[in-house]
Image (cartoon, rainbow, N blue to C red; front, side, top):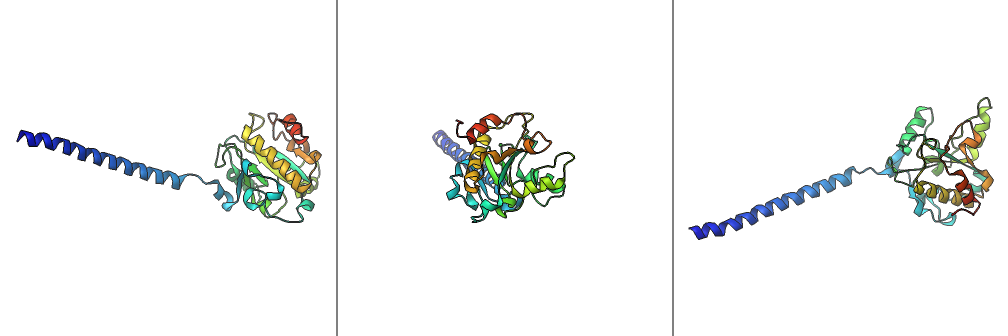
Length: 231
């Protein structure tokens, strides 16, 4: 009788151990499925628009909708002559939030053609959001009119200016290295494809009474990069 009891205990113990492990693995499986199903997908922002990381920007000859440059059209070089760089004004931000603010202000969509994330939102650090404006080759709505100037002057710039927005507030903090690298890659690739000279790449503050992209934007280093002397 004693022997039987002693032999039965390990069997019961092993059985209980197996039950515990099975329950644990089931919980982990459910948690994993929940994480996958609920993880934010930035490609669904503003209607499943295409995205590209900076590493996907391979050059103008390989540019297309899915690597972040939009339609292959022969007349692109006649459509765009300027690039304007902005900041979004908020450190915790993304393309979807910017679109909501722009639409609340009367626009039908986000006013920029590209938005570069900093990791504090649905866009990962350095990830490029391609807006509907670029895919459909629509005029931008990102350059503000100077105080006292004719609003038509800003409208004229917006018709030919590619708008690129860095998520963040350049008056309060620096942008991430991934953001500035993605910006450099994007700008130089667009320049090559659209025949845009370095002198036609502007900060928003160059054209309007604003501070965007802010005092912490590395303007000198960026200009050196465009001139081919940057690291």
